[in-house]
Image 1 (cartoon, rainbow, N blue to C red):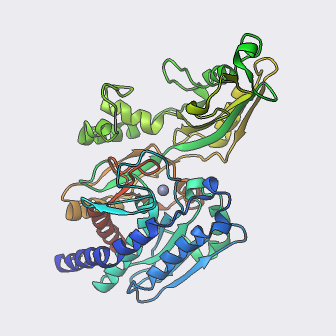
Image 2 (cartoon, rainbow, N blue to C red; image 1 turned 30 degrees about the horizontal axis):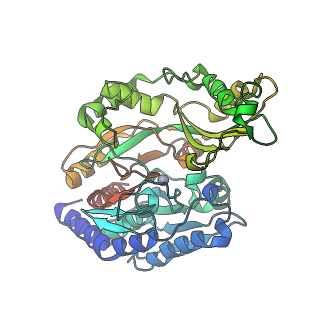
Image 3 (tube, helix red, strand yellow; image 1 turned 45 degrees about the vertical axis):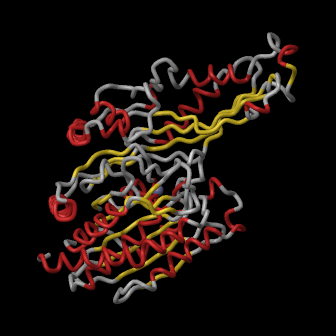
Length: 468
Ligand SMILES: [Zn+2]
């Protein structure tokens, strides 16, 4: 791409973000479209449909020469926006992926900020779902249109925007099966749902961890009892739950059971060491620490290794206990904890799920009713080696739009579709990237979209598609 064409792409991208994307994304954030796992009533509520229709309508404003577009809805499943844009150049195919379902609200939003009321402040658009992952459709289509407007040929582009990602993408395989012939064989997958280490360069994700969610329940009574009358006779369900957790996680060290570990490839370790050298203290300072709290290791590269190749466990929800202000002196009948394990990229999540279920349920403490109810386990993903043409396209794009070389590293999160695609198309190449950088806090309070990064990333996508 010559300098004049490249400038035209940047002008188009910037103008579209300003004039069209930001106003629509603002409207989009207002739709409280929680993923099915967090809202069983999603279909009746209509937010899912409203969100996908908003995206669909916006596409009408994009000056693409030709495209086929439709909202595909399989019965009882979250709708999927499917767009097929024919090549203006040679025959390679890019598959661009994003999602429009959202995480729940969570607590702790700063004064003046809230999940469903967008706020534009200091170059950031705050609100739930703008960065994760509402912007993906806008960036994808704008990148393609920018090439067409600048007269730069591109390959065929298939855009898939799903509504079930935050629930583990359990609807997606059904759509991929239904659309298999229409999708064809992609040569490149562009996924805009990942993290970036900083906002200074293009970041590629080379691995994702798997995920193993489930609810561990311990029940001991049919109803609560006076804690003085029952204490010493009836075991505490919370104590029994602590003991069960100890079977999979050492509370003193945080170490997880050996069944959840894999060996770390030396090239991944080297890549993380290079990333740590660039990010330095940013690896730690991206989190809102309380004063005096220290990270689990003092070594930056080791922290990245643990975040991307070690298993981890978060207790994301607790049930069976009242709020503290409402708590009487009652020995409760039971305690449940929602556990989310993150798994090393190459560990089979189904096998890990069987191991964990056996560890937690075997030989329960005398008489206690113990169950570990699994949700869908998701195996992680490791990118195939990046082809030289893609590596150089990514690096050039990063230099042009960010002024620095591209970097790559693994990511601690999970995007189920990448594993599905890697299995379905063994020769496909991946550009997995995103705007989830320091403090952007997808899934927590104060989620924001870093607008400058989103614009530059859009231009980078255009540059890479131009090389296909
Ligand atoms: Zn996401």
